[in-house]
Structures are given as structure tokens and as C-alpha cells.
Image 1 (cartoon, helix red, strand yellow):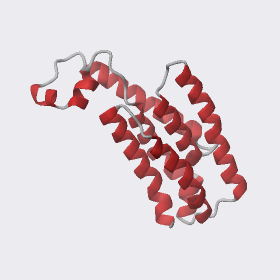
Image 2: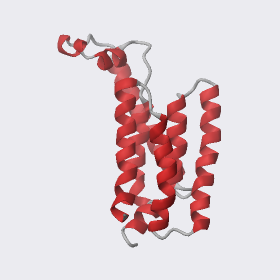
Image 3: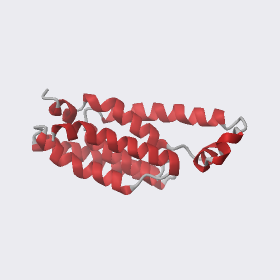
Image 4: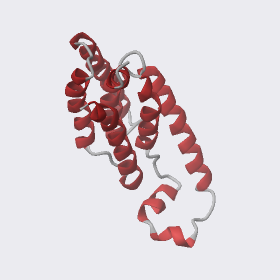
Length: 167
């Protein structure tokens, strides 16, 4: 079960990032799985209920902020839900590091896409609908990729990871 605590979060974040990259959507099922899986896995890792409650409070706080950003049209709804669900895994101690890391990576991704959109798409890549969509001048940025990578980078510092490894 402790292996699951180490692997579930990265797996779901990779899945979310890939889904966003290829479809510009993040399934609600991924966010739900993150929210639901945290409780049993954190209990198996020895996290006290009071700390688990604080982790869920962190996720709720981020949900309020990200839904406001979604309502203002600044981020997508899937990004808002994924950020909140993954904030549960980060907790208060690492949510800032996670959001800063994901924002930095998202900025790099946006700069890359803006730069790539200045050049014609090679003929070989024009056959891939997801690449064509990413190459459109007014196309969006799959921020789930940045959220996924940011989460994976920060995750080894979190209480659930340390608990799973017996620290």
C-alpha cells in the first residue's frame, strides 16, 4: 500500500498532463481520484487525522482561488480542479512551492508555444490534430502539463511521500 502512496500521485498527474496536452481537457475523474485516494493512502503512511484535515483545507482554499480565476476566464475549469486536488497532496507546507513551480513551467510552456507558432508547422506534424491545435496563433496553453510537472517536482518533499518512505 505504501508503494501506491508514492506512485498514485505522479501517475495521475502524468495522466492529467497528457490528457490536457492532447485534448485541452482534464477529466474530472482524475481530480476526483486525487481527492479520494489521498485519505486512505495518507492514513497508511501514518499521517495524523488533524494533518489530513489541514491538507483537505488547503485544497479547498486553492479551489476557491482557482474557481475565481476560472470565473474571470484566466484559467480552464479542469486546471482549477486539478490544482485544487493536487494541493491536497502538497498541504500548506508545499502548496506555494507547487504553485510557483507550476507557474514557472507554465510560463516556459507558453513562451515555447508562442515562439513555435511564429514558424510554419512541418508537413509531417500537420497530420496530428493535437499539434495543429497547439500551433494555432490564438490557441490555448495546456496548463495541466505544467501542473503535472510542478506537482511531480515538489511531491518528494511532502508529508505523504516522507511517510510512505518511513521518514
